[in-house]
Image 1 (cartoon, rainbow, N blue to C red):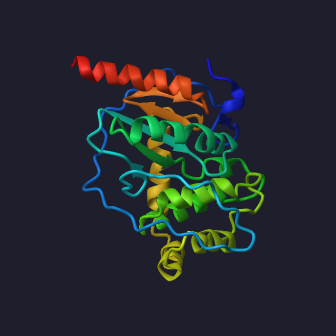
Image 2: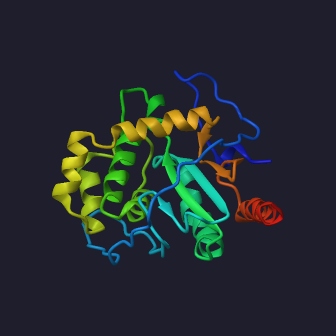
Image 3: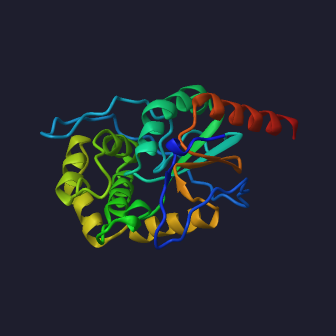
Length: 242
């Protein structure tokens, strides 16, 4: 059983949140050809903490790994969620090294829209803004680097840490084209995509962040690597038997 301490749950305008059982994903859209990203770049920017460097195999926007891998793992998360950060820092690297690099798992991160900001006492869009910025970075093959710098610099939710100046500083730190990045943020290029993420997650029964699907099997919370390993190995065994 998962502990409540590994999951961000909120109550408020979206109603009381509960736990769902197992949700099967009927169909997943497949991404096209995988584009190799440019060599990683880091620029020291005052006030921006550098994340631990990671090797992300076959980056394709918000996905990593072989799109034809036998197991697909989807995460629905929020860049303000402390448990999503916990997973990103501690468990995600182990999954990448053990399963994504080896071609066994295709891993996809989805935002949950403005999930945590819905429950702010003021009208906040920090969750949405962070997600839009990550997708804008992904347009320059830097989604995962931006994902990392957001979690490395995460502060208390809805505290103003996801300001436009902070998002720009994070973009400068990972060496992307700021003019292009700012144009996409200003025009709201990715707002519809972020809102669709939340709609899709809600339809799949996501009630808190992070929530994962491993070939359709739902896993709730920042669980241990051992739990994910068991779920992935079970999915691999099922694929081999088919």
